[in-house]
Length: 185
Image (cartoon, rainbow, N blue to C red; front, side):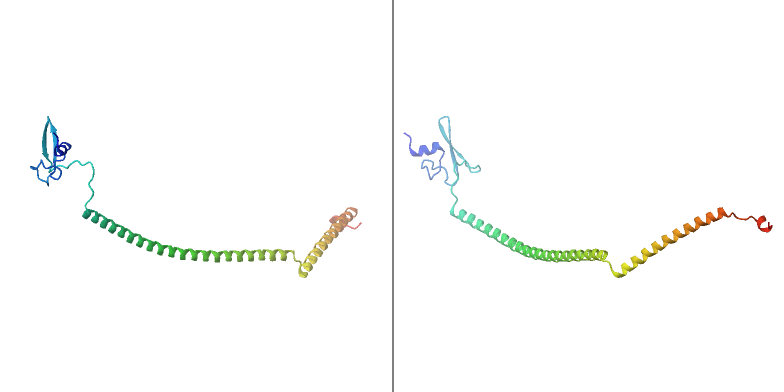
């Protein structure tokens, strides 16, 4: 007949906490029962790892240390993130100040551009108005210039008529040669 102790040995538990029949093994050394040719043999696995099907729950001491380490890591990460946040905040403030200064300079430059465009338009309008505006002095000078041009044309016409008259006169009354001038007829 098979007892509970025999069942434990067949399954592979030969620890004193589970079986009373394996009193020859020490409770601190892991053992493994193997079935060979209808006989049971006990192996001492002190140097080997015991194949476990399930991981046993960690002891409260180990769990406490793990929890403490996680807490420490979390605090370290929190401090690092806090420092990084402070640095980023300072960088953000300096960039905000720089941005506002650039915006102010841009506004000033836009005002200068508008003022220069306005001055340019005013000067172009003044130049256009000055070119269209006829002053009395300019009218007087234009009249004098036109009078001179007309007088010059008249003089040219007179000179031309005189030349034509002279040519007719010279053909009608030819020029006397030197012989004719020295001998009187």
